[in-house]
Image (cartoon, rainbow, N blue to C red; front, side, top):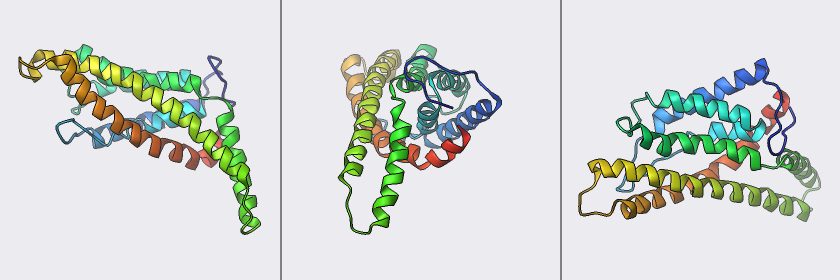
Length: 220
């Protein structure tokens, strides 16, 4: 299926439902396995969004949004939900960051897959010629990584403010001592958390999307 830029989508077919169900299941499994935090900044290996990002890259915003909505509803009842007693905090802490992935899908250019395909073919040609070095491959690689850095950075920035507001709601309920300023505390905790997540996303998501390209090409 051709990836359209901006808002254009195609009709959802049976294979789309299967792929959406698979990505949703992977998200929920990773949610259960990686939700536990460590250190005073509540850091965690937040790789649960990787399947949703893969879906966003190789399908469109509508399919990603549907999976995000369903995943957000199911995750509300999982034992790893730390905001279960404050539904509004859960929405800003978990659900909105999940839905923001569909926004990333809108801003990922159609040429991403074409560049990946171009890169694969040219790398093979370079290997066939032994030590010959193709600078176009390097330029294309930096171009692809530039797109990923911008998209993931925007996602991390928007997610930071969403989680900060969720932290204000959560900590105002008595999770911090009364003499602490809730906004400052929430921004400091979620700032470190967001940078940590940004680094994880930047390392894992482009590599995994590139790795699964041959499979996605055969499906779509």
